[in-house]
Length: 271
Image (cartoon, rainbow, N blue to C red; front, top):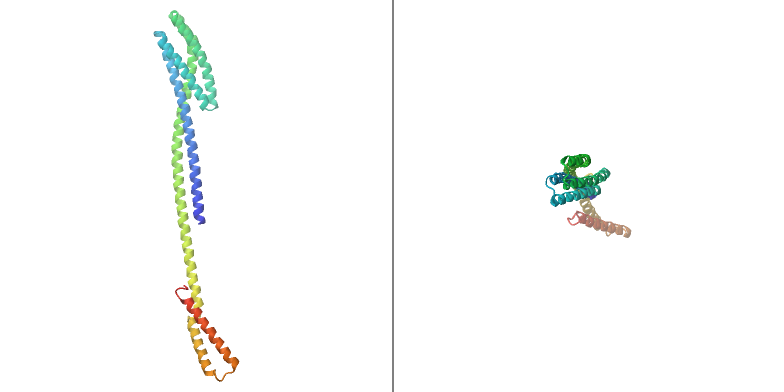
């Protein structure tokens, strides 16, 4: 029973620890995937801003301008999500990118005004090269690098979850087999102990009802003694003194009681 209890407690402990380890790894992997997705959204938004900026220079109007404004909002939301989900480095990067993006939004608005005024291409190109491109280039590089880094981290976290899951499964199975072996071994030990006790009990019972030198049962000895006592009683009943007759009757009664006890000890019910 003690071995079975230890095995059960050990199995529960291993399964509990394995579940906690797997749960923590899965939570870390899920968080890494969410941060990587936020960077992906930011990367998509900044690509859209660049594309819509070029489209506005070719075909200015409210449609590309509204789409560009929507892309600006998407980038801001993505970086806010990065700051909420990521670590301290992600929060610092999000703060820098949001500040750079404000400068980019202001510069792109001036670029759109230049296009709307129909300024010469040289003027518009100079404005873009001086105010839009430098900020946009730095911001794009930062977002792309962070997105690639977090994508790799998310893949590594997912692979780690699979490895931990396989390891925990192996440990659980090994612990289960060990617990089963411990229970079976305990059952074998208990069975052997009970068999030894039964063998010893039978040996003691045999020794109790047999003479150790002659192997004759005590019952046979008592029968002979009782027969002899009865013979002595019948022969000396009339000639022996009163005290001797009483002693003979007492010995005869003791022999009868011993015979009854020995018969009860040897009976199947007593065994």
